[in-house]
Amino acid sequence: MSRLHVTKDFWIGALRAEGPTFAAAVAEAPPETPVLSCPGWTVTDLTLHLAGIYRWVHSFAGSPVATAPPARSQRPELEAGTTALQTWQQSYDQLMTLLDALDPEAPAWNWAPQPKKAGFWPRRMAHETAVHRWDAQLAIAAGEPIEAKLAADGVSEVLDTWLPAGRRLNHGPWHGVVQLTATDAGQDWFLRLRGEGVALLDTATIFDHDDHHARAQVAGTASDLLLALWGRVSFDTLDVTGERALLGGLRTG
Image (cartoon, rainbow, N blue to C red; front, side, top):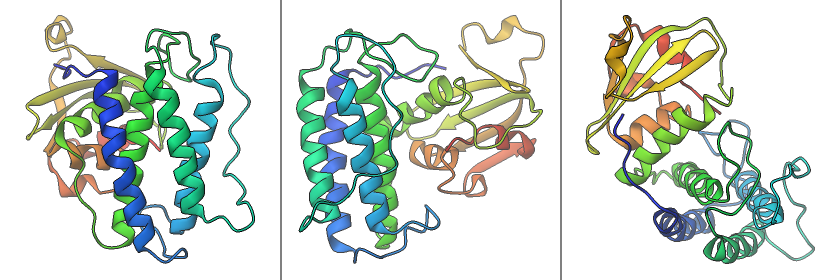
């Protein structure tokens, strides 16, 4: 893996681009429009879900300590006379004000096996917003790919954060190395699956293990790779060779 260099400013920039695009898609859709990529959800459900995440992160990410916050409630209640989009916009604006001023090295709780630093949250919110922007656009038949560099970092986030934290969609006895290639971002990832365990391999050290050969290879745009990892599109839409069954161990959600 040769991870692209990204910073807080990159993630804030992504949020500034993806947030308004999400809002524009929501504004175009009738509130009860189904979100096909989130079965059982309407556009209103999606909008309040994202607003709730923003509010939850806002409640603790700026705290001077890294203690765990109360569990997140599923969605905020709408105030009388307020729409879901207005609730989302208020939550987004408050979060952006916080993240703009946030020192990435300051202490902040997160749920991952990573240092408890505030820099976790601009990254997490950028990818949460980008994927849900895609969901919202799909609801109006206007889904646009996620920008390549952002999507490549999103793939890295799934592999270095979600899967090591045990946040897999499916659990199973997978064993073997999987190679992912983002054809438009010039980036490869090698992930070793060991039952419930996972290890993201550095290409500089991958040959230190006897069983280094990838048993499954997946190639496609960074956006399609990310959306496949999140279950938004099928791995069948990508170029897959080798043991397809291993790909079940890569999905998060």
